[in-house]
Image (tube, rainbow, N blue to C red; front, side, top):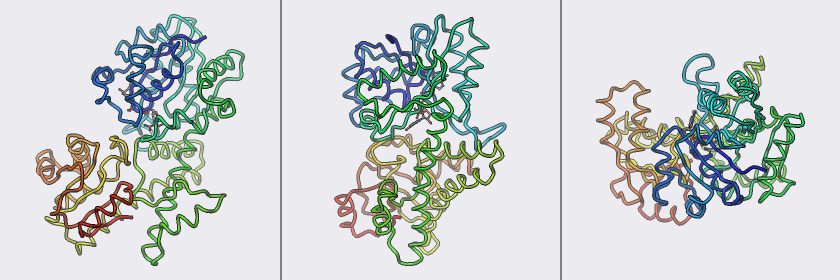
Length: 438
Ligand code: NAI
């Protein structure tokens, strides 16, 4: 019977996932640890200023924090006490070394595994919650074995499928929970222990158990398939604009086919977020590694269309002003990568705004959740990668403003990046300012 859980990584996945497990399993003590003490401080701080915003999350944290959910920077002590350890650390794309720009950077997960080996004094079930390349469990096992003193570690893969903006709803009513484990007796016991936790609120029929490699690869494949649908519909939006067909009508028509279904068929400026791009690049890298170059190229194309679509959108704005956006006042609706979250990682708005700023435009960002400091950091990073000096970047940053709602009548064009509802759409239209969207 599991009594103590430790989750390493208090981010978008670790925080909400552990909050829900704590709510559903009041007799299990759960401690979320992170190497970033500021994040832990914020998780323990005012309930309306948690590091992650998700509808419903604050209410759960309010209910369980200090009872059976704890946030701590004592990584060693909490690893030692736990019988089950989740690894929910970030796995970004590598920026240097072999596989740079494609492969997942496993340095955080490796550091995690080293800590687990170092501080464990009893047997543990170690769970991969982060999204990882297939066969990572083998590497983790090696690290654990090398550094442990005869302690038994059982490694499970339990990828997370929540979507930001609906994380709590997704965790309450998961389409499926995937648990990959070893076929050995101890492997199956560990699978059972984790299944029993989820089974408190997820029906058995939705808890899928597989081997470790299938579980690891299912997560990458799942994100690749979702992103592929977005790039498919976005590629067709370009053809619609040339031919006079209407992409929203096409989406409805396609989605009514029960073999295709309606989800993820809405054309947009591009997908963003911390996962889709990095997971597809990682998948393509794995294919290349195994000599499957055609397969790698197939998936890589999903990312290429995504980049194409972002730049196509910028070009539409430039064309609207007949090639010259200098001193033009342009509003951008939506800064986070999607509505309902303040996460801006890989948001298409960053490229759109930065490119326009470089061309001399003045920008008003309209976003209800993201703060100005974040907007500045995002732009500054883009401009630095583009080759601008600090001084040049700072000058351009004076040309961007943030507004919580649309109130900028000086705007000459409103470019829509977030999904907006019909009410907001009517409100924007009533300003009689031209609107550009995909
Ligand atoms: P995040 O960046 O929000 O959080 C990761 C946390 O881990 C950070 O707070 C970081 O300080 C901490 N960390 C890193 N190395 C550490 C170490 N050695 N010891 C202690 N703490 C450490 O990342 P996020 O978004 O929660 O993603 C985590 C994983 O989950 C990634 O692999 C991601 O692909 C996957 N995922 C993310 C989803 C999302 O919507 N954000 C959805 C499903 C999966």
